Image 1 (cartoon, rainbow, N blue to C red):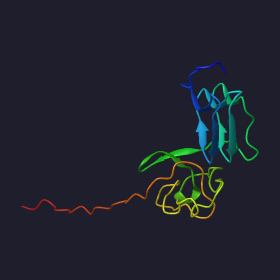
Image 2: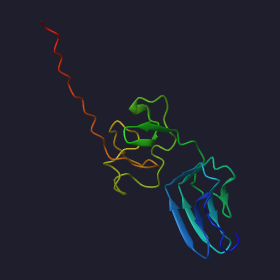
Image 3: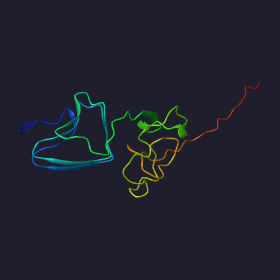
Image 4: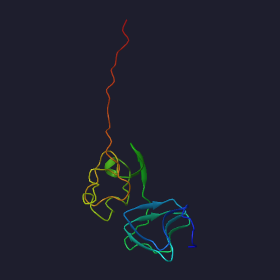
Length: 148
């Protein structure tokens, strides 16, 4: 990579002799996913690098435990990047459920959700953004029939 080249169309990059560790990330829909210049290094552990238009990796091979699968994002109460999950009533499960490098409890994610519907991440951590729980409020409506 030429000196001073910008990473503006890339998701993650290491240049200028830097060292980078990427662990448990979803990197998708960029021009290039992970870019590492010849004088830099990167350690890659259990990332999903998928569907980047020019290349998923440039200047580095995929990590031995990296994945390249559709995350199957769905929209729920707080955003557009929940993972599809049958437990939440979706038609299929994302391959990224329980795909993280650590347990949810070890990395402090056991009180958050990637599936929506307040389904906590338990056991092996899911890859992806972990949303706080959302209070689904049911508000009863009063019904007053028209009376003369």
